[in-house]
Length: 503
Ligand SMILES: NC(=O)c1ccc[n+]([C@@H]2O[C@H](COP(=O)([O-])OP(=O)(O)OC[C@H]3O[C@@H](n4cnc5c(N)ncnc54)[C@H](O)[C@@H]3O)[C@@H](O)[C@H]2O)c1
Ligand SMILES: O=c1ccn([C@@H]2O[C@H](COP(=O)(O)OP(=O)(O)O[C@H]3O[C@H](CO)[C@@H](O)[C@H](O)[C@H]3O)[C@@H](O)[C@H]2O)c(=O)[nH]1
Image 1 (cartoon, rainbow, N blue to C red):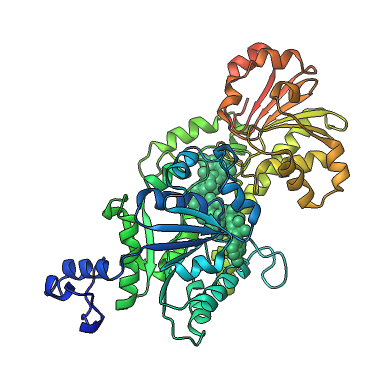
Image 2 (cartoon, rainbow, N blue to C red):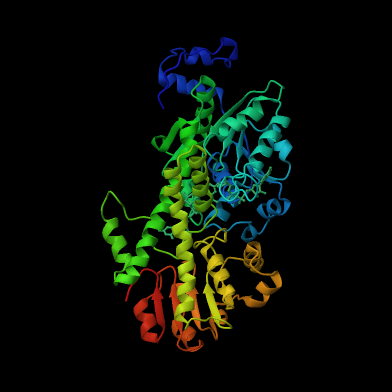
């Protein structure tokens, strides 16, 4: 960060001895040191104990043992799960998370429903609540619903008795910081707030790894002296474990927009390779070979080119639709249409996977048992939000299929609730047509086809001969993740369909 501002803090504002020690103001190094001393954070509060708030704060507490970190949530059940003595009962499944929680919980990491107390104590407050797509009114189905963010801002405004730094950790539309500032600045109690944008880039399933070793940490703030002080305070937190050259500081708007842009670019890569997967199937090309060939071009790179049944997760679709809405609201219709196509392509990919199953099973799946391996939106998570499995299941249920689902981490309640949420049929009908199994072998017994919806590693290790022997013949496998051994499966006798592979 380049700081070139006149230094105008009053002498009386400086802690004892600081002025003598860092008297050469105007030099960036000294200025930064001084800012660090003035803004040392001892208490952090995070509102929202979800997939981001929980792991992110656990890692901050682990790496900054002298900072007290309190994560609060309205959801008492979730907080109780975070406080559960048995670490296998934490509310989210992430490899490595239990170990981090074990190290810090009770030492300097606390989970609580006492939101007001935590806000009052904290010098820095992260807002990490959900920002789903609006389901009503203006912007329905596109814009981000900011009601939870606004509630947090109002609560912070009401409780705060001293100056605080408020950090946007949730993914937000560009210029949301202005709205938060408006709410906070109109409290009338003289408290001063600095708003920072610090979007999170962790991916589920690798959250702890990503937090321990991020590609970058992005912090956006005001370009005023007070803004720099706030930015520096947050830089100092991350600097406990993140190399300084990976901590990037920008203005607030760039930071907010970078998060939406990153997700749009990532999702676009998935939709691009998925678009090619359909063409591969028609032409006899193999999408994995194509991905490898293009990925070796250093300008393209090898990551995020895995063809699939479609991207899921709570972020990609929501954030792109939000971007589309923002572009439209500025009258940028070409920009909006360009990005919307990424979501349209993704919907097509999910639908064509389901349609291919129906078509291959002689144009009807009515009354046929189809086994689903996987329900989570990707491996190593119990999160099912926007999982492709939900939409493929819905399409097959519309065709009167009987589904047998096995997922190593997703609960039965979650699967039924995902289907009920779509409102395509009654809960009773979902319960009758979908059976959930604890064993993949039971799920596949008597099935006409197996569909692989999540890329769990254990699926590759199954006794596929045993699965085959217990199925109806011909026995079909529809591999929506391209993870199984085609030669092995075909030698056993399966009719094997792999996404993106033509015959
Ligand atoms: N899930 C991810 O991998 C990921 C990654 C990066 C960014 N994000 C973004 O981070 C934000 C949070 O996502 P998440 O997946 O953690 O959501 P989540 O739904 O898992 O968690 C949000 C939590 O906030 C709580 N909450 C809502 N309003 C509250 C209030 N007023 N007071 C106290 N608690 C409140 C909810 O009860 C919930 O437990 C979203 O904006 C998301 O886009 C998510
Ligand atoms: O080559 C690929 C890569 C991913 N996916 C799918 O894309 C979805 C999203 O995967 P991933 O991005 O790994 O997980 P998320 O947890 O959704 O993480 C994304 O969304 C987060 C929330 O904003 C961001 O923080 C992360 O940087 C961004 O990767 C999943 O369904 C994956 O199966 C593919 O189909 N092919």
